[in-house]
Amino acid sequence: MGTLRDLQYALQEKIEELRQRDALIDELELELDQKDELIQKLQNELDKYRSVIRPATQQAQQQSAGTLQGEQRTKRQAISAEPTAFDIQDLSHVTLPFYPKSPQSKELIKEAILDNDFMKNLELSQIQEIVDCMYPVEYGKDSCIIKEGDVGSLVYVMEDGKVEVTKEGVKLCTMGPGKVFGELAILYNCTRTATVKRVRVCEGRNGNWAAWTCGHVARLLPKRPRS
Image (cartoon, rainbow, N blue to C red; front, side, top):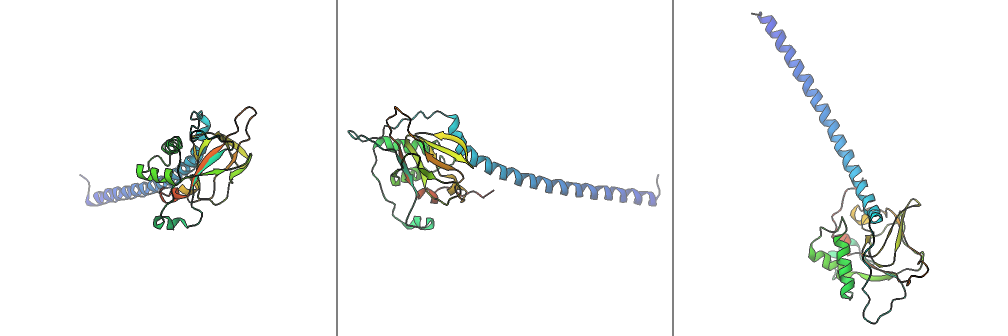
C-alpha cells in the first residue's frame, strides 16, 4: 500500500491529465465551430451556383400556351414581380396591383415558382400574390435583362423563348420557359450574381419571347446571410 505522499502524487497526475484532456476538448470544439462556419459559407455559395446551373441539366419541356385566344405574339416577353416606385420595406403597406393573364400564363408562373428551390416553400397564398402582381416585360434581341454586379429587386419567370446565363464572362446555362431567375439577389440581399441576356432567335423559329416580372417577391423570401 502506497504512502500518503504517493497517493497525493498520483492524484496530482490524474488532475493534470484531466486538465490536458479538457484543454484538448476545448481546442477540438473551437476547430469544429470554425469548420461548421466554413461549411455554412460553402453551402451558401453552392446554393447560389445551383440555382443558376440547375436549369442547364434539364430540358425546357414547358412550351408557352399562354397566348390569349386569337392573339398572335410577335415579340418575346418576360413576366416580372419587382417594385419600381416604393422601397421594399414599404411593400407591406401598399395595395399590390393586379395584372390580368390567361389561365395558361397563371399556371406557368405558379409551376415555375413551385419548381424553384428557394421559392417553392412559400405559402400558396403568397404564390398567388406573386402570380397576380407579375406583369409582362419586353426585351429586344441580345438585350441584357440582368447585369452581374448590379443592384436589383426584380424576379423574372420565362414564358417563351430563351435566355443565356453567364458569370464573369463564362456561359453557365441557357434557360427556357417555366424557369425563375433573379431571385438570388433578393434571397441573399446582394448584387446580381450573374448576367442574363435574351438569346437571339434561331432561324426558322417563330421569334416569340415572353417573360413576367415583379418586385413583390422581395418581402416574401426569407433572407439568408451573405457568405
